[in-house]
Image (cartoon, rainbow, N blue to C red; front, top):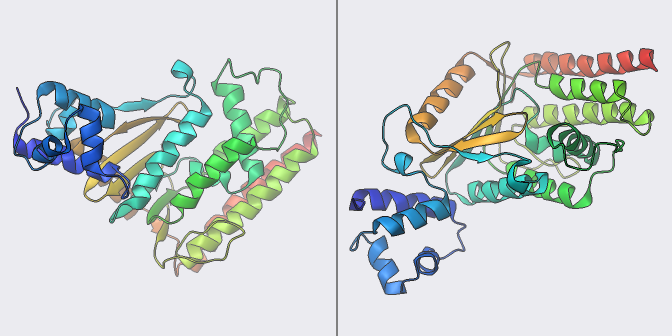
Length: 335
């Protein structure tokens, strides 16, 4: 059964939302299907329907699920998986995939990210090389058995290539209108990981533990500054941005997982984290609407601490600073 023209229009609209502005869709479609520009134009205008084989080729190439395309309302949702360590998929591949995705989001005319952060949002790991070095070590050490990190000690020197890729990711993220929902436990995961690495004697230099705590405190001050200003900017750069481009909410108890909803020119994409940093990704409209409704409800039951909410913002970040200081004290006693 060939796709109906209306569905074909939706398909092409979805693809355009994924392409960078400087990419010619006609050229892309012509090259992909091995057809002339004229034939590509006729398909784009709906004058000629895609064959089943062409539909399959296009959907596979652009990673679009047919059920989402047809808006099938059932309990079956197709996800794309980004799983580190599977089929040679490395941390570098994972970061490059995120950079490609964030560039497309940034290029959209209408864009928004809603991030329910059980843990520190992954973009922030690349604000400081020390945090990036720690997370890259921890991921390799605990998630990828054959990564070569079995007997490697932890230093705070981030692999240059990975760190630069992460900086690209962050540089685009800070320019996109973003809503983040945190709880007091958002920082707890990395603190537990630092303590685990210390107790396991993974640090090559004991002083690096305290250096990492210092950097985390500096990072918290930076996020607090962003929340106060209402926009994001990279640490060390001038504090410049668009007012109200960044909204930070605090929730007392309900942030139980890392969920990201992305909205770009009418298209919704849900990123659902599992096994620490692996991701399941879908554009299924029914599922994405459910995720957005859940996140909006979470926001209603949260306190916005960006903008003018100075008292609540200061109280929240003071609590997070106390958690870092408590870790420092525990490590001091264990030395």
